[in-house]
Image 1 (cartoon, rainbow, N blue to C red):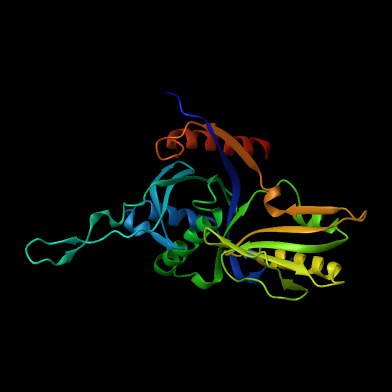
Image 2 (image 1 turned 45 degrees about the vertical axis):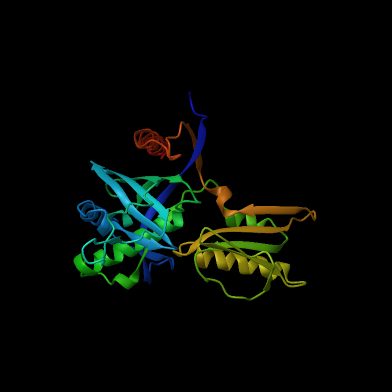
Length: 305
């Protein structure tokens, strides 16, 4: 019997390595050579799964498969929540010993990532399978940030590991700040983060804060008569945190010049692509089909540049 088809979202990204301290003539962060990240992936490809492991918010995250063909890296992540995996007991002396299932017990959620390097570019391109409830792009970014710093400490001794930020920025179809400027005032802001990266200026905490899958969504509202100042504060917040490794998204509610309510969301400006698929028994997308579609997306994007 044929299973029901499901739909999976794919997003495109631009990868750069920014300096935390050096600025160019336009007061923007300088970019490190993207080939540093390429050399890191070449090194990472030789490691076994345990060495690629990372812990984040009570989840196991690791690169399960990794292959490179010319300029492309085909990467498959696994992710799952921790569970109690009891140790085995020796019959002779009743002592505990390691249970080999401890690493594999929750290797059941699959995420696919394709990374492409092009000659003479200061960035890499990427396509990521979107399963935010399993492994968000923010966690993928944090995963590479942590491992890249360790690699730089050991193998790129001309670079200060504390000066780098690994940027994994969604490709956008429109300008969030342009849409924000159209509002006469902002009344509420919902900010999804992996940590506390904001400070209070023109707002109070609302009662709509929530935590879902390790991401904190903070609901903030303008103080009375401070809607215009709040909008300015949101622009500064966005400019300050859009490349921060803990930032995920902003949603703003405000009024237009006619007094109507408007909602704008940074996620609405991400380029999204949809693929219908027949899931396997673990509800995962078959790897070969995923990478075939991702190659199509990245090639189509390059043809339009």
